[in-house]
Image 1 (cartoon, rainbow over the protein chains, first blue to last red):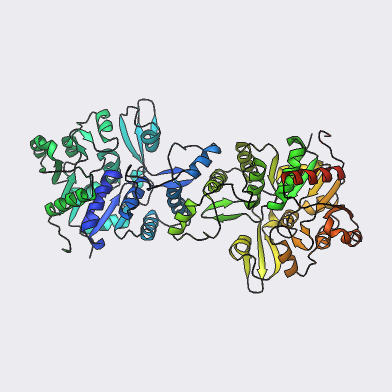
Image 2: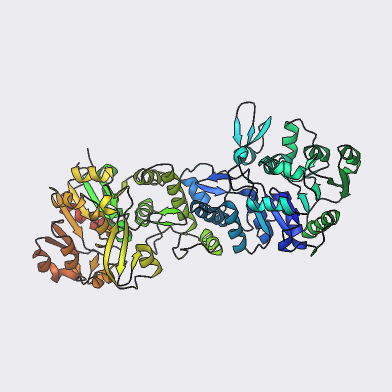
Length: 317
Length: 317
């Protein structure tokens, strides 16, 4: 029996939701599909920031201060790479984190797919739920400024989103194939959840993989999105800045516009209660609750409410 | 003007000699050619143990306890690799050391030769003397037991040389090419020094690269070897055990037999004074001195004596 819940996610914000879901649903009831548009090669190693954030979060190993990276991390290898004048040492790869990239890269070079590598790494860290990259093919998010194209990590980490952008593209998406476990979930799930992740560069790349948008548009089960924008601000990350640059409304309404026809329900925060009618005008229902997830209890509570909306309860499948 | 002194070396023992030489000779008077037969790929990364030992030693970064690896090293990445059940975690790669292998592998994949990578890494660590791999091509030392072939690091590190061996081979040597700077040194040096390195698996692979043995055999300058076997024991490493397995005499005489026709002088330790006639019977002269290098002063003192024997003095070239 296929897993009834398909959750789409990016990094930190979505990983919180994924953690909540994983605390409620057994491993055979949840498929977590993760953005790989911000994967990058550093020092010849394949780095998958969002896959790792979700994996570390579910393994209980994530750095609670940042939401990404590993708790208690050290940076000895990076310091030594800097001594060699290696490029890109602005991307803070920790010593224990590097093991993930080294192992992933080694297995990829041996011909493993990214999906299979992800399953292997998760299993070794004791993660029992399915974490699936959106595609086994390379899709690379780039942002366009007036002058040039920037790789996403360059824009996001090195330049701290300072450049004003006028477009976002997903290089390689047109020829990418949906990962098999993602295709199965699109085919058989009872509910699709959009975790509170950046609509442009976390959900955007997932939707850019050919076949995904149409499959979700024609999906027969429940489709629920949790807004990552609360009170006009992104809880974490560059979503608000990027939406503003692109001339989009920086609010849960702006998020809803991007998901029009793809989600039936928008879950929004109490502080955005007055936005319900604007969202409903887009043909979506709204559900108002506390969507700020500070503690693990917050994550589980929100996940429970979302699953109740989707009429999914533990053990239903 | 080509560098007048060519030193051939393996890891720890030879690196001590190389350090002594580097303290006396300016960088334009010494070429240090290093064994790469025990290079190995771990976790998809190219590891060059002897090149790194010599580089770290000359950079003043080597672990003084072991002679190899970096001082103050930590092993966080390796622990995390073990958590992923990565193979070969018995090979103790430290966090800072890993940066060397990551950087080297990245540059090799970009098409750099091992020689060029070595020059780059040395420059970044402030090493001014030329450290040159014997070849830019892969030569892999393997040992043969009664049952099977073992990669050298498997035999040496994982199995601590416990298996009894009956042969040593250098896979790939027959099609390897001498590294350009090594070829230049063979052509133009005034003296060739065999550092006190394992005759089987440090000097052996260097001599196995096509053209090297004949070039040394017909070399017109001074050829001097320092015995790595003192009083019937290897100062460091498996030379004595390996020589015994192969039925060779475990002594400076045994070393001299391997270098017959390739070296004019054997430098032996005081404790081996009674072996001089046996060595001279092989057609080599002997020079007896203290060859145990405990301190940097020992290394410089021995290097001075060897250079005097070779009639090389600083600034001569």
